[in-house]
Length: 114
Length: 111
Image (cartoon, rainbow over all chains, first blue to last red; front, top):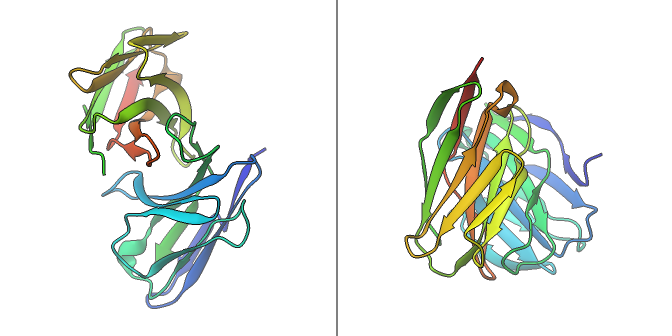
């Protein structure tokens, strides 16, 4: 019974289009993250949020925009999609952003851009 | 951010033998070091972790060692079984910062 829900699980998008990846966590955590996994860069950190505030952004492109409408939500909007954006996007959460809190991953959203 | 190096990238061992994966980090502020196992098509799952106030931790067949002076930590799987075949990721977590992952080790246990 997953406690971090990601939608959709699979997604095929056309180059140039825009998509939103949804993430909701039911662990009562205050910190949420997005990671990207591809053959080239396994588990690449993208964003971290704590109490709905952006803590760190290590994604060079502004085409990736996280959106936190509620404490337990952290969606990822991707605009002007490119084939290189094809990857599995993992949402994750931890109790808070302090060191030493276990990081839990959602089941991932696999994006293919054609 | 923190840089984590993980070796080897590919590891094949005979069933019943031990497997070792080594990681190193750069930021001396890192004080929490989890290990994740990821099976094909699934998400990474925490299998064991160690904090900077420890040098060794064991959970059943999993042993992690931490050498803070050398900024190295390692995972040792004793008496490997085919079910241990998976990708393994180490990570380092500096205080109030994010989790930085190694590039992963693909472990295959040969029956």
